[in-house]
Length: 308
Image 1: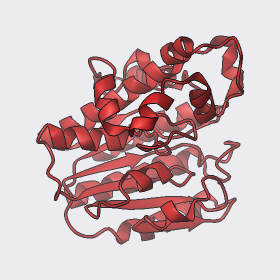
Image 2 (image 1 turned 180 degrees about the vertical axis):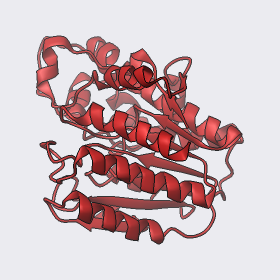
Image 3 (image 1 turned 30 degrees about the horizontal axis):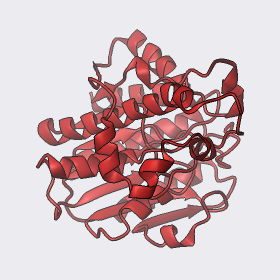
Image 4 (image 1 turned 120 degrees about the vertical axis):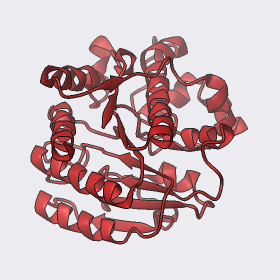
């Protein structure tokens, strides 16, 4: 397994970081911890995803909305600050996100070309969709990548794709993006009592695992095993959203997992994918606590050592 990282993933807002609980600088912390181990090989995208590729994914209305300061602030769930202009938001937040999308695309291409597992520590923007942006997600990286892989001839429309979403929040953006695509199978394990409470997109999920608030690690992992056992058939490629907002210390996820539970979760998923011989790219997803970076680092090292 190889890890995808670039220093441009980091979202450095300075004192403005207190406007949102997401730790935009956690990516360098993950990288530095992994680099210390000497066990990880890193890859990096050459640049952020091109705007033209994003525009091809978005609806005509959304192409304008993503260039509007107020729309971006609403999607990022930060209060409207009069002195903040669009160019600042684009430089400090949207550009790092476009690097994150490029990381997912690089991982998907490498997985299809070389086989195996690639872990993009950014990305996982599963609340965004062609016609909307919300939940701190502006660009749906999986949808954009899927579209580009089709264009590049690396995927065909009849190829089956698997999306495993373990973020604490339901992936409404992915469900909406692939609403009419039966070749994309969605497995989503999430806290059913929190945002987004959209029954229309929840109904699109092929393998739903709705959890109660306060679900602990042992129960979560048993539910995940049940969900994974329901995956059938062959797949060309898998995407995994490995959100760490499932941690007990996370104020937004409402679940009660420990750091070791997150590592065990990733091992269960990767073992399943390896057993099924499905190449995959793992993406970051949500994570709004001080333990998020530690959980990702420990999970990557645990998976790496397990497969060695």
